[in-house]
Image 1 (cartoon, helix red, strand yellow):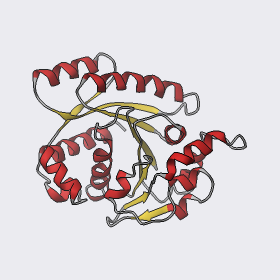
Image 2 (tube, rainbow, N blue to C red):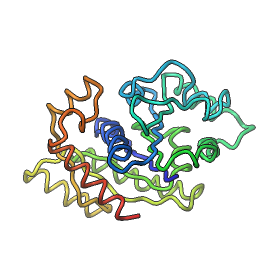
Image 3 (cartoon, rainbow, N blue to C red):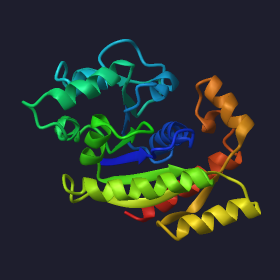
Image 4 (tube, rainbow, N blue to C red):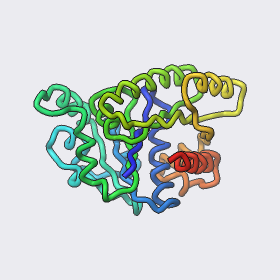
Length: 249
């Protein structure tokens, strides 16, 4: 099983939108078995997949449940979910306070129990650095920073790259694949931000256009963009990104 962390300390860059639609593309177009882990207490992935009440990532982190008990089947064949809830906030605090456990390897050890059941795991991380994010990066093979083409996004990327380097102390095999630009527009400002980003970090060639109306409508209906508008700019760009990502393996 290949595990990817989708991350940025800045909020509003579209990590969840990228994650859920990438999961759909991997399962439907590539015929892969996908596990999505919602690592954000806001639970947006969980809402999209219409998760049921039950065990969540918080229960795994504090040792109340094993990952096999927390995995939920979604309405999509080939996509399973470990859901999140507001309880993840308390779980992060509990993990930090527990001196009797190795705090940063909980998720890695949990995923090892189900690695034969899936081809790909996507971890959608919150816009912060906490115990569950450390666990996600330690458990991951690759990390992708998603950002928007603006000055605040660029600053967040620089900080995130430094943090990824620091995490290699615990996961020397963690590979930073690069920065994925989301909500891109072919304007002088957009290209100026692209140039600034390329000076500080590797950037994927594919840039994801922001098809605002289609994305908002598909999110409201809790449908993937490929079900709602498969030919819109976002959908086509994400396919190109997936091809670029897989070619880099």
